[in-house]
Length: 78
Image 1 (spheres, rainbow, N blue to C red):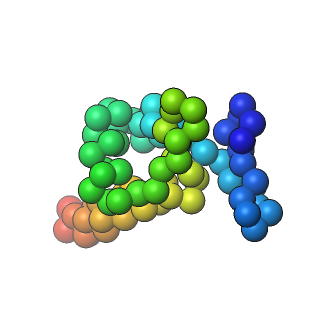
Image 2: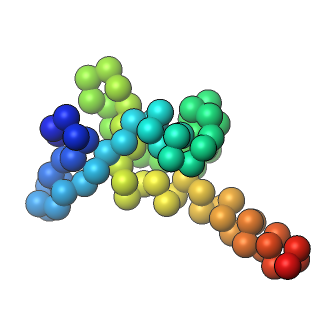
């Protein structure tokens, strides 16, 4: 992996990796909340040196349940 967080997978595809802090900032949640979600959802992480990274392909799995609950709630509110 290079400094930009991009890695070439075994299949030859490029995959972006993000730090816990960056993903938390993207979704405007605390790092602690994100770590709980990762633990509850059994999301795959990769450790590079001393830092933990989350692949771009794993990010949608973080909020699968919440998004469906939000969708249902919005239907009743609207």
